[in-house]
Image (cartoon, rainbow, N blue to C red; front, side, top):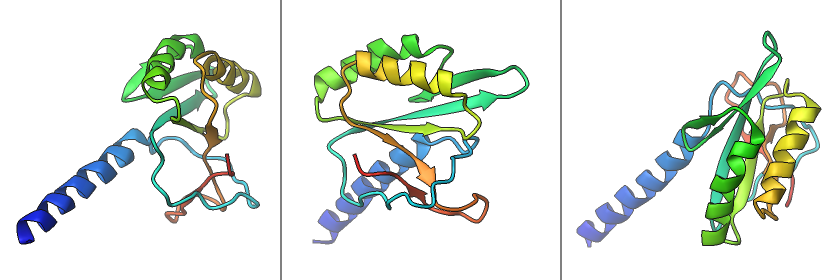
Length: 139
């Protein structure tokens, strides 16, 4: 019985650490006071897309699975392959609050071209800094 519990413990620890590794601490999420708390149920599958913005260069970078992409169009084949493998996959978009609308628009077009139908924006309900939890609007 103890062996089974240890195996389950290792399994859940590895799953949770994988999700944590996909987030980027440099992304400062926008504030949405009226957003709903994210659903605690485990998604069938999800891909986390981190979007960083450099105001000095006025350019954005996209980070997925620890690989950086300069343009949104480069992301389409990767997402299309993941969606073909799992059609119910959710795309969690974690965009920095300084990202320009035009860049987000191009990214959403690329995600749609890949065939994604479940896209969720990650936001916070108060200023970051004190470890506030992420919230996301319902899909």
